[in-house]
Image 1 (tube, helix red, strand yellow):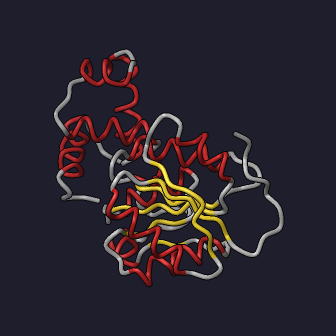
Image 2 (cartoon, helix red, strand yellow):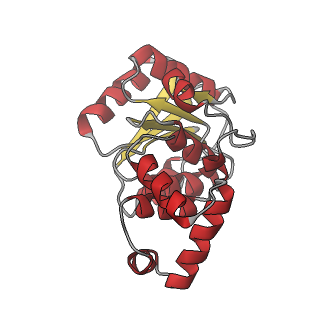
Length: 222
């Protein structure tokens, strides 16, 4: 199947990636109700999802991060590699700023909460289609998430995706050996990353890092 030609057109093409049928159908109805938009397809997080997106050549892709954040972030990076560029709006139930920061850093153009009303979701889509950054107000209030090019006050923003995974795993009580097996690294490499994370966060000891990681996983610190 050949991709849909990117010729001049009056309607903006929108594609939906979501594994929740009810919410996905709600998004489809919102899109179809707008006269200047065209719903061009939908998919779940299957192996061929990127290929399907490529074939439909949308102007905007809505991606749900609720089911698998890791796979969602990888898909964002893939979509952003398309030429001509395709806009990406993340939809999620996660209202913590760190999730929005990770999505924007992966290449997303916006982050809207699923619990927002239909009119706000439409506003988010229009903002992104018009070249603006959109982040739900609730998310902004939780940590003042900004664009991926902006400098963040929180040191967590300076951690890479792998470092964030290590921090999360550490907070869940995993040992260096367990993390090494999980992330296909050596225990020495894991320990070196932990030390790097400790320095980035400005913590004085490994014990302090472990306490911080536990508090972060439990939502005590953000």
